[in-house]
Image 1 (cartoon, rainbow, N blue to C red):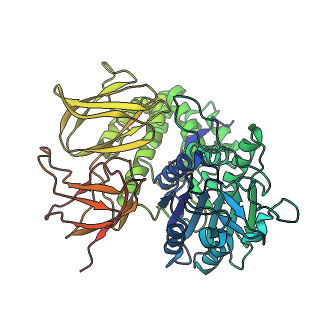
Image 2 (image 1 turned 180 degrees about the horizontal axis):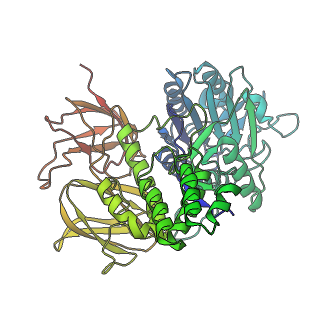
Image 3 (image 1 turned 180 degrees about the vertical axis):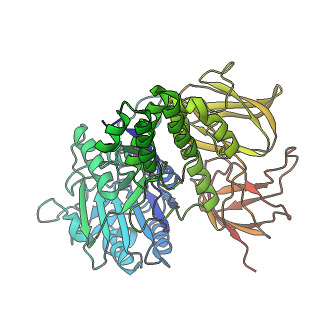
Length: 583
């Protein structure tokens, strides 16, 4: 009979370039336009989840409170020079306005309601840019308040007919809007002392992607349809009187927005009656034959068969007589270090590759190794694994990207002296740790021999990564049991050119044979950004390898690694693109 379901890591996203442009305007110079609270928060949250290499895998560009000209330039630059296989996503959060001739505009910071043609961003212009873009898959998300769109004296009904404004000749375009043309797009109600809430629609999208709850068909991917369906249900279940809308223009097949962090739930397959009968035989030799037959499923491409074989053979190893149990353990031991494309990964759909185009191959392999080890740890909780698998795991040397201090898995912390908010770890070389914040914010201290090596005193609500060059035994302390600390062996190996988001801590290390060009793409509302280049093996950290400050007037600079084998950018407060300097 079938065993218990198990959760496996989601498949990798297709090998493709994934790019997102996030535009948000909450401040308006025209006093007749209401100031908005949510766009800034929405832009940050959407940027983080889309740019997360384990979720969206997008290269994200953000424009906040830009002028109409700045928005047009950003759109033009973003959609230019795209290839046919690129996936592009454009997101706008702002006011939507309609002139007397029923032309739809998006409001920028300097838009004047009585001069829309000169100061707004016309939807027809945006459609033309999308039509001219070579990318065959396009997603447009509008979280705009259209209810006040109609200029005084406009005739006709008060429905915008949003769909017709984006009906072009291009293929593969999906348009999502937060509400109908005559409805408000609601923002969350502010609570004194708490962070400004985002809009109802965008926060539903973010929640669905970040948690994996939007994976409605549980295939390990969140498609555009999945995300829309999840957000639609959440918005309609709230008190907001708005109805999200969706239009498809020539779209064929599912457009995948993200991998599901929740993974894929695998139901064990039904073991064939013939094998079950053999395992129930009163003759040990017959049961051994059944064990050998079932063990063939351990190499099967179907994860449901792999899971059924693992669970059934574990039961045999636990309860059967010694010679039968030994044969079951023999098969299980041989498959503890599993093929990464079989038991601990679910096959991607046709055409999907084994990595995200926004990541270097080494970084993706490290992330996949970590997820596989999580699965192995779950398997190690079974009786048969406790009997024999530890020696095999040590010999195989699989702990290259382990969850060191995950309060759920235990990892490598000192269980005799640690609590859910503290632990210890011994490193033999440079390494990184990630601090995953909680809703209340997380602070963190890392020390060695009574000396603080890193203290994060400003609360972290998302994810930050920090490089550590020192070796030896470390102790860490987090402010809350909801904070999750993850360690990764090595300093990382990002591949240039690479894009790094702001406020994610230190970047992964990257190799450069000479000077590099760093260009700021996301200023996060600042006018300057300090770029500090460091050596991940420099335990003394006496001085940076190179340091420069860039401004909005001069957004690019050149940094020199000075012949180092690898370098990284320290504690970025702006989003940047890094590439080898052109000769």
